[in-house]
Amino acid sequence: MPDTTAAVEVLLEDRHCYLIRNCLSLSEQTSIYQDILCRSKDTDNRSKSCMHPTPKTIIFDGNQSSLKFSGDNTYNTLIVQNANGILRKEAQNKSQNGMLSKIMTTSCGTDTKMSIGVIRYHVPDGKFPEHVDHCNDNSWVYLLSLGCSATFVVKGPHSEKQMFQFNSGDVLVFDPSSDAAIVHGVNSIDGSINGDDLPSDCPEDFLQYRFGVQCRVKMQTQKYF
Image 1 (spheres, rainbow, N blue to C red):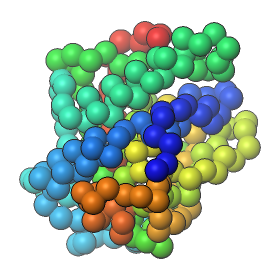
Image 2 (image 1 turned 30 degrees about the vertical axis):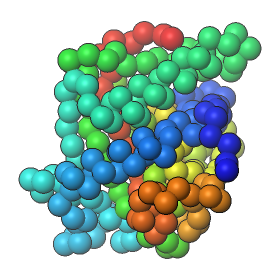
Image 3 (image 1 turned 90 degrees about the vertical axis):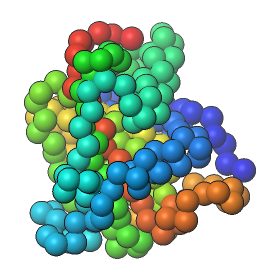
Image 4 (image 1 turned 45 degrees about the vertical axis):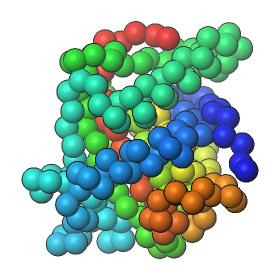
């Protein structure tokens, strides 16, 4: 069985961009996926993606391309708060990277606002071109990968390009603002899943697709761990 211990990788030295390996257990991943299935209508096959024709945006009830939440919910609990807890422990280690020691967390309460968007990638042609988000409303992104592994890339304005395997259950946390200017994208979908011995209750779609679950969380207060 693969190592399922959560671990934090600091990807950029001068920007908030952290990869949390094994952030969610398979059970937690399945819970997220089942919630997506319950809420989803279909993929948007009527229009082409603005950046690449292969990935498909999951459409939810009401013909919406994203879910909106205010307050606690499954995505907040299993993705955002799990990630925050792991990052908090890392930040308490005084020997950690200086950026990590200053990372901010969201408050978890009735006023927490977040949106969820899901993109489904096919094997092996799934790609999403490198780009910079320009989200300047004091939000942070928590990006969960489900299913097949992706070759993912990030790059800061003054750093070398970092390429890594983005496995099922991993979460990427980063600042999506124009000032941060973090380039990111999906180079390929590898057709494999992290781990050799998968439980029999693993969702079948995890073996055929990669799902990028993006949680964009509006910061209520800026406080350091």
